[in-house]
Length: 212
Ligand code: FES
Image 1 (cartoon, rainbow, N blue to C red):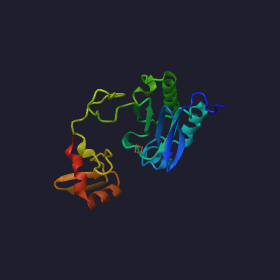
Image 2: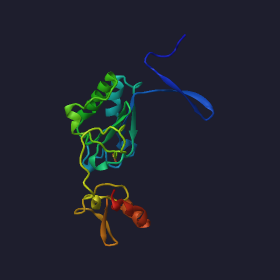
Image 3: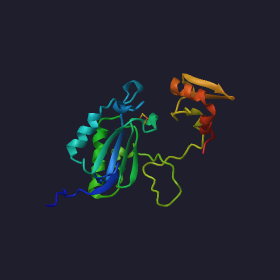
Image 4: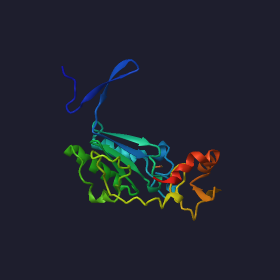
């Protein structure tokens, strides 16, 4: 008897000397989560919408898409200043979602993901998500790459002096509480821990200011 469920595809993976079956899915949604160690997303005291993991996972379970879209709660995804953030990887495309600070956007993200699951393809984001999707990754310079979401012009290095060189957070130099004067420049930090890390090995962080 064929026990394989309709619509489920598995691959055989060897690990630790044994064979296992791993279900293939169409995508994965990564949600930056305070409960999972984020430093900004979900922190009400930092001006972000407080979101419990269950607000995402209940919606995910309710839709019954577990076997097609995996849900992962993560620590910091990187671009903290724009949090709450999430990353949807689906049909081979990475879709960055920023500023998810309205509870209705959780449902909108799943609606969008389900639309793409049904279509078997990447489709344009709905109007309510358009302003929240922006390409984060650098273009690797080959034609197979598809930039996704709003495209903003790089600022040509104008913003480098605002970066905490340790965690790469954007810090307002006018209000930064943590700073050092180093080799003729003022370097700002988001927190004492970053400042301490910088002072322990400044040379390893200075390349950040060289720009691209
Ligand atoms: S804390 Fe969410 S992206 Fe850094």
